[in-house]
Amino acid sequence: MGNQYFTDETVVFLKELSDNNNREWFNSNKDRYLFHVKQASENFVAQLKQEFANMGLPYIADIKKSLFRIYRDVRFSKNKEPYKTHVGVYFPYKPAFDRQIDSVGLYLHISGFENSNADDGSDCGWEKYPSFISCGVHMPEPAVWKAIRNKWSEDYNEFIKISENRSFRAAFPDMFENEALKRPPAGFDKDDPAIELIKCKEYSVYNSVINKELVNIDQIEYVAGKAAIAVPFLEFFNEAIA
Image (cartoon, rainbow, N blue to C red):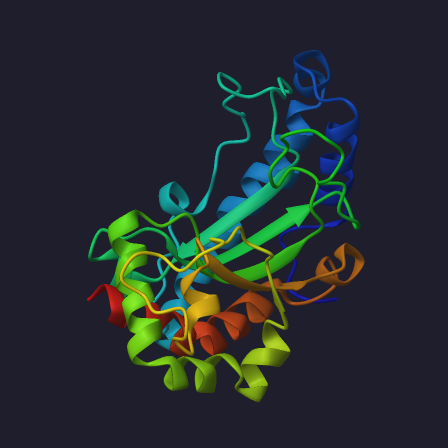
């Protein structure tokens, strides 16, 4: 058995919450949440903070910056379910974060679902995606994204070399089908070799992980290993922002 923080009980709680997403059920099961989700998440982040330091990896692992509240903001959402049904753990890439850019980093998503139900017609966002680990740039501000587009245009071959590296591709084999522009943004040539990247509105790659495997591996080693492999990829974006 590996070094575990998130267990079968974490996954079961999240799945049951998705079937009973209401305050009455949550309050009746709050002790389960506090132990198997909240405390597990905090312990996980604290241990990774130490592991990142030991390995010299430039990520931030901090309870306030890495963890998200379970309560959904339903003010502007059609979906009025009060709770998130996944655990999201985010590790900002420190050099970018030091420049007050919080959209570059590594993200672990743990769900009670093994198959995506995201096309069920609701605005659930990440709520019903299967578990995965990802890295990249998520929902950047316009100025940040413009800098990255310029970097792609100027150093396209460098980015391809990094993103097609065998170890990196094995660690993050898939790319999210992010929304893209239909036409090149202003200032970019349609014949630019990087134009398909430039038309993206954000850019993240990921690797799905099966819950029954996740709860039986050394989760610290797993995430730290992926974090080490992701450094050149994230550093490319950091250099663009710099």
